Length: 204
Image 1: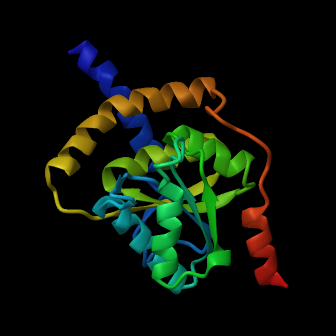
Image 2: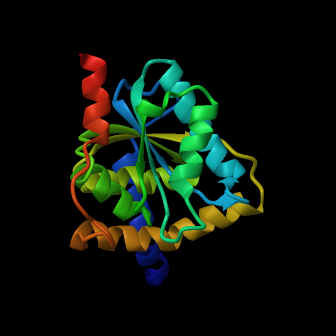
């Protein structure tokens, strides 16, 4: 029983850290920037799970709650480009090219959160992911210094959804370690001005 309690402590932390930070798209705060986390590609296109995240970003953009969408995902090999596919999807749904910024080194949630803050200079954002992941995303981005709110999108409770929920128990353990030890991302690199440039252009 003690081992079970210890195993669930990280999940308890992620839920507590995000408890008062979760919103629907209709109730999301005006944050300037939406961050969409990658969720895989099928034949070079967003999976249904990722498409649902991107649709939520489009909804926030059309409602005027965000001005820029930062897509973060894996582009560790030339034939797999999550941010590029996400950008193409958003453009196809009416978001202008200059309002989309790509992070090509978002290899996991912690890396994405650190890069959002350190590389792109984002201090406040609405994060978009599935309901089973959004608690961890908000908790980690807050630990990385981002004033983060979360929108958890709905999906059919299929095998993938249940797998994702079960995986979160283990992932929460890694998240807790990341928050405590603050490891440097797999790739950090130089600062990028894409977000500040896009927001600055809107202010001109």
